[in-house]
Image 1 (cartoon, rainbow, N blue to C red):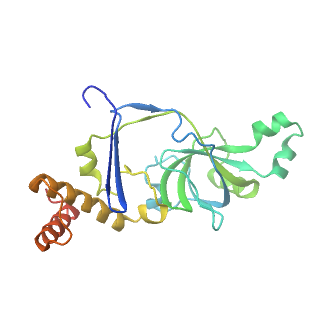
Image 2 (cartoon, rainbow, N blue to C red):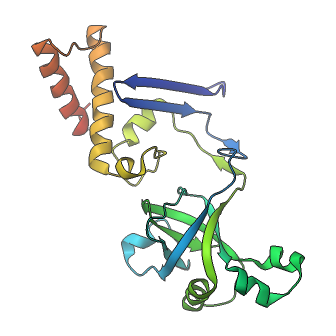
Image 3 (cartoon, rainbow, N blue to C red):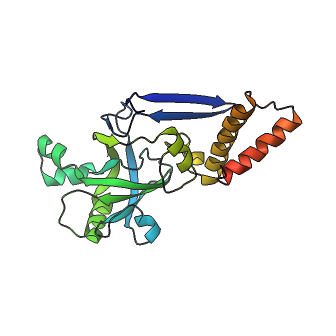
Length: 234
């Protein structure tokens, strides 16, 4: 890490996999996945009024809760930028030209603050728009049919392995990339999986082997280590 050499570790245990990446304290990501951003159908956006929904925002920020259409799943993560896109009929009303349609088919960019579940997340408005928050929400709900992620280069700070292990139980530290949206966002499941991997590391370090499933003492020791890891004991 001191020589800024990128490090990637992959570990499997049964049906579970843990991947750790450390590309140093500053790393520029130009394109995170190489895929064309998915267009997700929009149900509505609402002005965020609950303190919990405004996590990560400044007092002056306009924050909204974004709801996907039923059975639609988004593919956004914290820090992503999205753009709300007008329906074809509203884009044509602005100007009949194709050039104008391409330029004005969106309703401004927003930054994702927090992912709540596979169909709902919060954003703050970052576009240059003089309209008030309620007027903006009304315009998006009236004109927009969908939204999509906007790819922008960004600086990413990677944690060292030890700092990542310390932060794994903190829900406010978003250090995980969800691989299964139904289960990865469940803090109970996440904590159980990470505690089990931590216990596996501790067992292998102490006994220089992996625990055997059919050995009673190994199972008891592993369970105790997992409980200690889940409670944050060192």
